[in-house]
Amino acid sequence: MPFETCSFSLEHLGEALRASRSTRRFLRFRDISPGTPANRICLLRHDVDVSLEYAARMAYLEQELETPATYFIRMRAAGYNPMSRRGRAILKEIEEGGGEVGLHYEGVGDAEDPDAAFRRFLLEKAMLEDLVGHAVGVALHMPRRCHGFDGRAIEEAGALYDVSSQERFGGMSFVSDSNRQWRGGCICEHLRGNAGMHVLVHPVWWMPEVQDADVGNIVRRLAEGD
Ligand SMILES: [Zn+2]
Ligand SMILES: [Zn+2]
Image 1: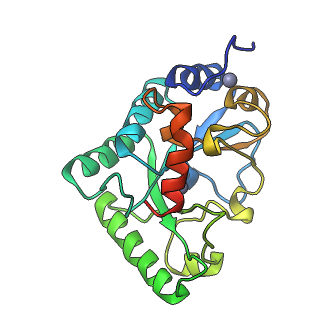
Image 2: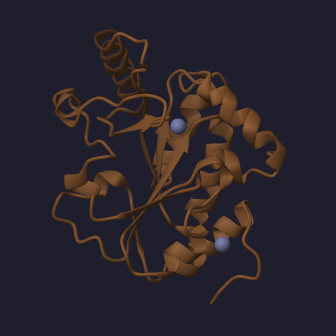
């Protein structure tokens, strides 16, 4: 049944998740193996670009609805610190509530030394693993601006997975709310079908205090490295 209005709000996200939780399986990325059938699966992914507090609000909603998601966390965002007392508490709440925490890593810019960038990746991964107490999967931040590391190097570094692995996640259709815009329709429409979905939802775009007029500024600051 279609909803009357689609919007970027926690209310509408909740409606979309509630409507599909009886027909879909919401799995964390680490629950998928190369042979897992994709049909009716939803991999709900949150790239935490701007704020852990926004991620926490989304996690509370998903815990209430029992639709677990995977949260990819940056180690050098301008706006939050996962190693702070509050940061660690949020990571713990996400995982204790049934979600998963992974690393949202910053890749290699055109002007950067790839070896230095990879050493930094290893350090960030080790720090996050120390915080959560287990090996983590990884997702590249700003893929249109930075290159990721190759799958083999990531595997050899001991990551659980890379979300861009075709072998493991290639059976899912990918949709994203990048820049507060869905391509090919709102999340509620995508979840209505049976196809396996990898749905990227950035918590920042769903918060009431973030206005449409703020989007350009937020995107620009992220592109500058904040
Ligand atoms: Zn909708
Ligand atoms: Zn990102």
